[in-house]
Length: 263
Image 1 (cartoon, one colour):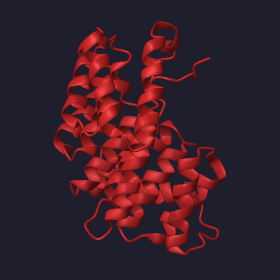
Image 2 (cartoon, helix red, strand yellow):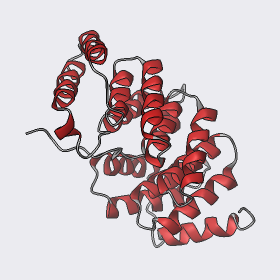
Image 3 (cartoon, rainbow, N blue to C red):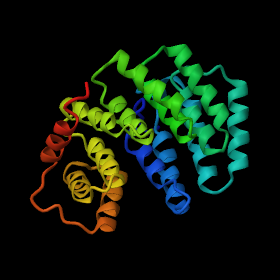
Image 4 (cartoon, rainbow, N blue to C red):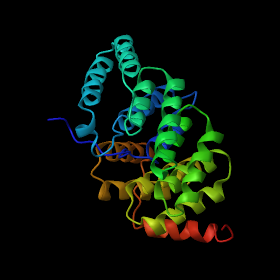
């Protein structure tokens, strides 16, 4: 029985900050580790009923992942190319095709696959977030930002887009606007572990380690996702700070006061 996969069920807003925060010249090994987390997460992109509509694609995914994990990337690339040539692909599987293209080192084909998915299925916030994350992983931040902004035009309370746009704004030096996005996200999804991870990453970058540690500590309390817990634990270890009595809600109140003039 094929494993069940959910459409776009990976962790937007967690992977992107890891990629960007640690993709610095002085820390190349962390950048590579972050990209690996991104690809593992992105590969879980599926529609709920994909297993009933295209079993052959599930088989392709499993075989390709086995080849990639074994270091046989050329074989995986060839397998993917042969499959795509033979099949007219349903738009619902194209995000997963894009993920495989990324894993085998074919980013331009991944971009095309996502464009085709959006062309077939329409401008859905989930697809726009996914495409934005893919573009962000390629360093195409202006285009990435456009996807997140379009997702918010369609659904102004979309927490994934709020988190993703926050990080993009922060990277562009628009820090107050970035935190304003996170405050909006907090009011939309107050128990989000993803929000706490990205907020911790931005606060850490801005030299606010106590508040960052508070965010990471909350992740350990709320999340059951291994990659999230592992990342939060690593950052707490590096910071070496006990958040003490500071709670996440207080951090968000501080940020909301700082962003009071931004709407």
